[in-house]
Amino acid sequence: MLFAMGANKPQTTAVASCAAISRNLRHFRVFLAVAELRSPTLAAERCRVSQPAVTQSLGKLEREAGGDLFERTRQGFYLTERGRIFEARLRRAMRRLDAALGEITPQLRVTATTAQLQALIAMNEAQNISLASRNLGLAQPTVQRAITKFERVAARPLFERTSFGMVATRACRKLAQAAGLAFAEIDQAEAELAELNGHETGRVVVGSLPLSRSVVLPEALIRFRAARPTQQVTVIDGPYGEMLGSLRRGSIDFILGALRGPLPICDVIQEPLFDDHLTIVARPGHPLDGRRGITFDQLVRHAWAVPRPGTPSRDQFDSLFRDRGLPQPHSILEVGSILLMRELLSRSDMLGCISGHQAEAEISKGLLVTLHTKIDWPARAIGLTYRSGWVPTRAQGDLLDYVRDVSRQAAPSRLLRQIARPTPRIYTPDENLM
Image 1 (cartoon, one colour):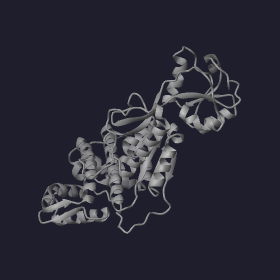
Image 2: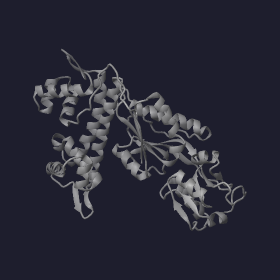
Image 3: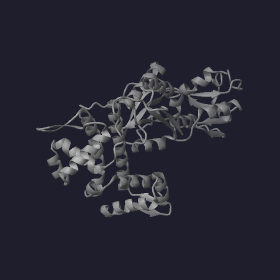
Image 4: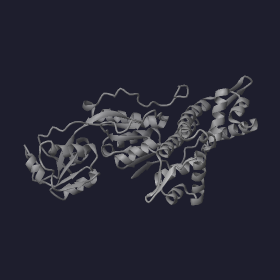
């Protein structure tokens, strides 16, 4: 499920805006060579192209970047502020991409094209040539040729043809992820360059888990929108596993919600913000409403609406009965929405198990009531999940700061200490980001 925040019209400014930067890998390598060697002549020798080709590549990139990337002097070519922003992002992207290409064969660092990599990414996700072509908006033979040429240079198949579709090999999956993250880094470069010209382009993509949709994220987005009226924001709702995959591919910038323990995979970081505890809720006037000392036998006999399996909330609910040697309730509906749970409970004598923070709005409006049990629910850590090594743009960093501020105000007494890991910081051009 998607929720997008955007402006109806782009903000106008007297400064020229940058165009979308074409994903020409050869031009990228030429630019990085000039930035390192400070000489178009030496860069031409390294990249094995003519000096006019270097000049043409730089000119095209500068037009797309919205201004000069180099200050041209008799002593050499020196990066401008715009050039430093672009170089830092681009170098991160190409180092990641070249490492993955080199694991298959070093020759791909020279021959691979953006079109081939995009076809590879689409096939890895769709596992079907027709679906991949449709997702890219290209003819099927075009995508097929791109993959065939890539495999020919790789000197090995990158997809296994099975009855279930074309399944990517391990090396192919790793390359597809690296390419997706490299392209995401270029997207961030575009956003940083546009902001240098006074524009807000690109988008911030947030993966939203159930608690964050009603407790932290709405207020954070309101504050962000007041500060950045035209910046596009997309909020994605969905199962944690799917959003984690999108996060690792670069399609989502960060996930907000219940953290997982242990850490689900080594290339992401979890940043705790506050603790939350579960509660049991029912409709006003429920037979158990207002009773004290509700027993487990009474709870077991009722039908329940609870979170889906695999979520921290569901794990706690299941262990509530299992740890006491009691059978699970015989009637369980698995729901992922507080709205659906509220409607189910309001029309029946079902019980619900949900985050205490998430239920506060429903309880304060008199739509649900908390049942008085003696259950000592363990704390659940609520926080941010983002990629290890991720460097947010200024817009992404602003939204992160608003999320942290709102979290501190939402649960000051339950605020967790920051884990001993570096949190993502807003990019500044003069820093060594590698």
